[in-house]
Image 1 (tube, helix red, strand yellow):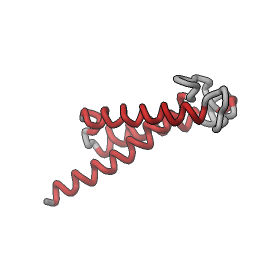
Image 2 (cartoon, one colour):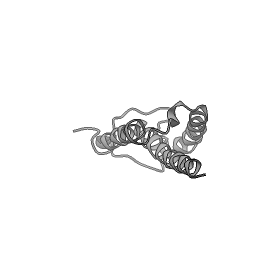
Image 3 (cartoon, helix red, strand yellow):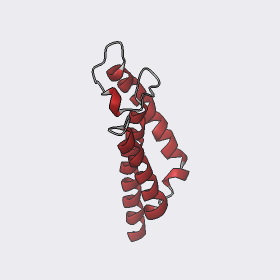
Image 4 (spheres, one colour):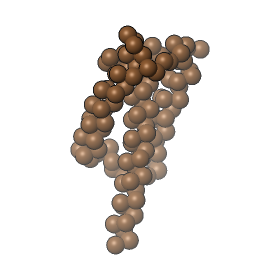
Length: 107
């Protein structure tokens, strides 16, 4: 099956992190403008670095075509890279927010 090697785990990572926030942690992170500004900054740097690493004209990082969806944007970046990036950065920020909330409660 095409895309299962990298695409499925990428989608599952996004779903897991979103469910973790919405059903378990409930920090309200997704409602904060600072979160979305942070994600835009991360995304800008991800495009610059990932675009250089994955450009099809001279790739540094290669992906087996049978393990990705084939959707690449911009600059030949596999869409799965953005999904994993979202899940990774969001999970770290959720842990950070959770700790900040705990510190506030104990103060």
